[in-house]
Amino acid sequence: MSLRFLVMEGSPAPARERYREALGRTPAQHYGDVLVQVAGGGSFDIVCPADPGGKLPEGAILADYDGVAITGSPLHIWKREPESIRQIELAREVFRSGVPFFGSCWGLQVAAVAAGGHVQKNPRGREFGYARRIAPTADGARHALLAGRPALFDAPCSHLDEVTALPADSTLLASNAVSRVQAAEIRYQGGTFWGVQYHPEYVHSVLAYILDQRAGDLVAEGFFVDKAQSSAYSADLVALDAEPRRDICWRLGLNADVVDPIQRRTEIANFVAWCKAEASQSDAA
Image (cartoon, rainbow, N blue to C red; front, side, top):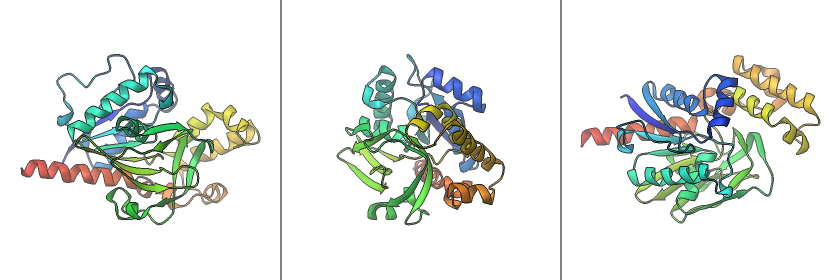
């Protein structure tokens, strides 16, 4: 079965172009490539609702897609900027379409606010690099989004904000010591969203890029003692994409849940399985 995905680009144009110049693809292109790879084939379109006039490809409607995913973003949804409001409005349309809906980090925050939840700056500070000791709730342990995840796991992450209140018709699926809402299902106006606060789609070099962009802040916040230490950490991350070296994994405290790409992308694989199941039901009907 060949799936067709729509990827909502969360970043405004200047941020996504910096990303593309550094890594060769925009965040949405990277996300779409991961979805198609995990699905074993298919295609994806991109919509950029942060941009004025950002619309679906000409002639396309949401019902044409087997799944919709939202990327991360450097925006802060609590600022209520036009770039954010446009994404919230499109997220509501996706909910109403009933198409399987998924998002990482910013994506979870957009879907939560679209459905009536709240997002604020995390009073415990930034969570960066790897979200540690994420624990599925009792509901999460039974939920298809987290199928295959153990009782505790780590995942790539980078966020300063968090969902402080889930919408009324939601289920909390996972938490850790930094963010209570690490994974959730949100139901709104006939649609369902699965989201995570972390980034199962990331490779390690994406974290290295973000680290390099925010090195000054990360030093000021105590993640590193100086720029040299942050640069060394960044170099380790880049090296991990070439080879899962034992010395780096030991130094950074990384296990297979983030080093092995199949385990790291567990939630994306589960989302793709949901999309396939829904598409099969639609074909049978």
